[in-house]
Length: 418
Image 1 (cartoon, one colour):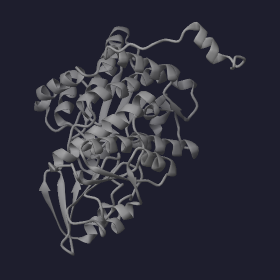
Image 2 (cartoon, helix red, strand yellow):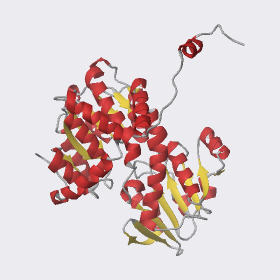
Image 3 (cartoon, helix red, strand yellow):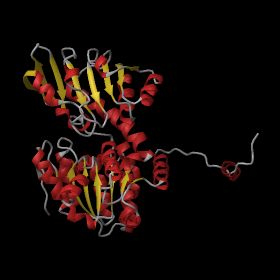
Image 4 (cartoon, one colour):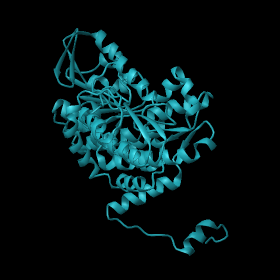
């Protein structure tokens, strides 16, 4: 079996971590058991470009047990857990192409090795796999019935492709499922971003001015956790609606240029590029810490920071110190890549349980109906979203009410008023 990982000898350690993650993924576990019994994906070829973590390993095992032929590569050069990659190769028989810290050339070679699998379904996190297919591997497109996309950044790219009429097959935006973005983006990103910053720096957050660029669901989650740690949170936005919401949530809101001279820690979660730039760096105080939790490392203008610096050194494993010409120092975390996976372990398994349940069931949906769909971006079918929510509640031992026949009739009617 073809693969490219750091060290197969890491597999036993990775297997234990995968088992630990599975303990907290009961929804995916129930789907795994069903797939193992029914084999609904028998013979379906899936190429996945995801963060190579213990949670992803449980998704790959679910697809394999369902009969799918799976290949996996990393969706970010710093997000791979090498022991999980090794375990997937050795114990699950999944061809994995991912090494933590791989360079740009290796990253794209791995993307192409995953595509050599000749997929019928693509599974993406950031749309790099889809982009590569459409730009350099177009001969493979005729085999594809559909794809899924995990994250906000990827959905933005795919909707742009659909609008411009270049998207060649249907994609389900897993990110837009309520059981994904309302939980994974908010609670997962919120906790894991703070976790990554603390692991990288070991700073005390209480009393710090914590600046967050972007108040989408990820930004909301980071703000919630930063405030919980005692930080004084400042929100920077370009959209008046989330900016107004941040004010109503009790946060200070101001332009990033004004926040630049106040902040102690800066985090970007916008999905856009060049958010923190030269004009912000020159206003930052000595010792400012800058991190990104968006999918790509383009939110922070790293070349501009490097141009301002007279020297750079790696001061901690995930901390680069940039000493500016005036003697001030700015610290960049995780090379500007998503800090929650570069310096920590990403989202907790308990929340990835729902996200990857969406991936598994959306893959099944596409395998059955993909050929009937137009070349567009679709939401996760409502029945799948609700099924996952009910399964999650059941796994937590929580019961909820049901509508009576009278209530259903009332909600469906218009005649009855006061």
